[in-house]
Image 1 (tube, one colour):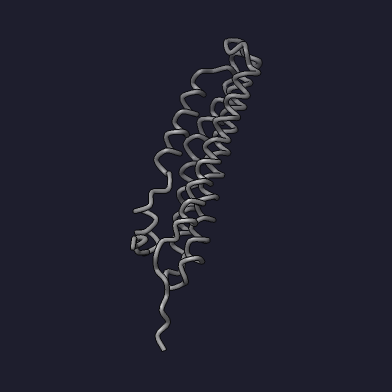
Image 2: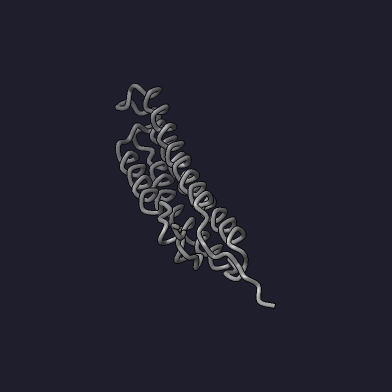
Length: 156
C-alpha cells in the first residue's frame, strides 16, 4: 500500500529553528558586551604593538569559519533523505543548522577574545562581518520549505 506522508512544515519545528538561531546570535552579542564592559581601555594594547599574530588568527577564523560552516551545513543537508517523514528531515536540518551556527559563533568568540587582548578596532569590523553572516543565514521559511521539499502550512 502507498504510505501517505505528511509533507507540511511544522510551525513549532520552524519556531525552534528560529529560536536556536536567535540564541546563538544573542550569545555572541552578550559576550561582546561583557568584553567591552571589562575592557575599559580599548586604546591600551596588552600585547606588544609589533605582534600581529593574533590579528592574523582572527582574520583567518573570520574568513575560514563561515566557509567551513557552509560546507558542513550543505554537506549535511545533501545527506537528508527527502523520502523520510518531515520530523526526521527537519531534525537533520536543525542539526546541520546548529553545526553551522557553532562555527560562526566560535569565530566570533575568538575575535572578541583577540579584541580583548589587542584592543584593535579592526577586530570590531571582523565581528560586524560575522553578525552580517548571521543575518544572511537566518532561517527563512521559504528556503527551509524549498530545501526540505515541504508544503507550506495550509490555513483552514
